[in-house]
Length: 166
Image (cartoon, rainbow, N blue to C red; front, side):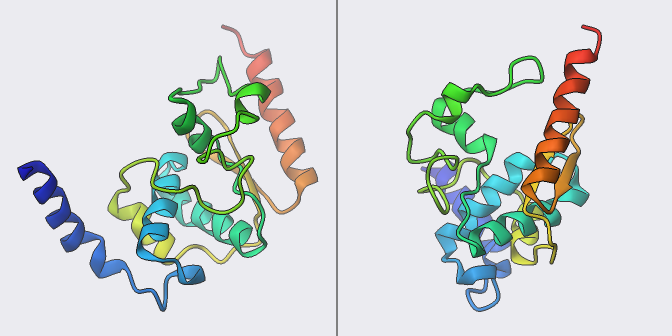
């Protein structure tokens, strides 16, 4: 019980001062904001990309697009993809409330414990035209404005992985 109390005190001290329902994008509730920050936490490896990733998710939510983010599928299925074993089509198509490839909007709850940087990024996401991104497997992402750009980037990355020596 003491650990939970300590975690709640830390959340109240660090995260709550950042939350303002009137300025958080889309008027997200506190629970929705934490959920979005948790997805950014799992997607962003490079700190400088957090606001851009948050901006992409806000853009998709504003347009009522599915988030289609791999960490939600990993969370739902209790797996962790790797460069050698990316998510399969079967996994992405597995029904689950947390699968944002199949379900619109945010999942029912957080998929990780977000850090301060992810809370900050989702409080003030980058104002961007990007709607898509794909991981480069080095922690960086390729951001795209259109589905065509995104598909081309995805194919380039997959080809590079397939061409790399084991």
